Length: 424
Ligand code: UD1
Image (cartoon, rainbow, N blue to C red; front, side):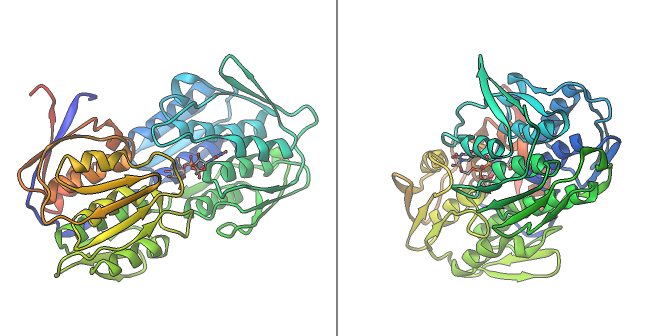
């Protein structure tokens, strides 16, 4: 419900165990990849969040048949005949452009509404264009719709990205798998979600090497060789990092299960530097803290650097730490809107260009605040848990985009947090 809010009673300590869901940023692309195989593609560990529903609608609009059984989605794109992602979806969820590469692979053409601006910066798609153009794709824009065509088919090419863009790497990959010849992507994104996408593509019949490194080599195969498969989505490292931040903030111990600790190496290092104790097992991480949080400097970078999607959560930690932290955002422009909301709760943050200078305060105060994006929303709820008094978080549809049952999971860890109708 769009007008619901989350109400948090503060001064609580999070402790216990929580299971993380499958990674949103992986599952969305795994669903898009299903366009390449005719027949039922079965994807397990898909989170119950609104972004996934949106991607299901995009695929349904193309003609796919989608069934859900709990956290398992079956996507059958056998009867897909359309090759258009309309504005109605792309404007609401930018990740809809992940269908561009697979549609080009399947039909040799695609029509995708231009995503336009976004609250966390310009988020251009020039690298998607440049990479796909190297493979033989031509682009026109007609009344806000991007029209992609392949007049001479798709051919392998050497593509060097200016920046290791996650979305561009994925779109190029999903087209290159059916190109004639070999494609080499240099300066490719190395996020675990790229490896997950490569895994499903290989299970469908693609030949790809080097996923997880900066150089990915793709030997194109005919589309007819692609077949349906079954795949399990990797655990969501950002959801895990969010709960760990909650543990670090309140003392914990908080244990997250269902995520590979190596996905979060840099964030775990920062937690230790901030005075937390961190233990890990094969698929779990536990954080706890006795003394006060200690300030530290952080700069967001492409994986394996510190993830931009944990920046807000760590600005919150820095706000409650002893000393001054310098947080630098290198991935997105304009991703500090969260800081302004946190300042309403008593945080001391000075913003300068893409730097936030955060002076730790002894206590945050509950206040009405607004989620400005998905991760900011999650961090504001955590801020409410540690603050004095009551915090109301508005615009929580952002949180629902990416966190399955956030309120329920936090409640199970001991938070006093509930959803209420805004008018109640
Ligand atoms: C994905 C994630 C998002 C995460 C981000 C970085 C999904 C659905 N979203 O977003 O949660 O924060 O990776 O880890 O998976 N850029 C260009 N030109 C391009 C493409 C990107 O200039 O053609 C810029 C963007 O404006 C941004 C930066 O590169 O400043 C990173 O973007 P990218 O890695 O592509 O992020 P997304 O795939 O959009």
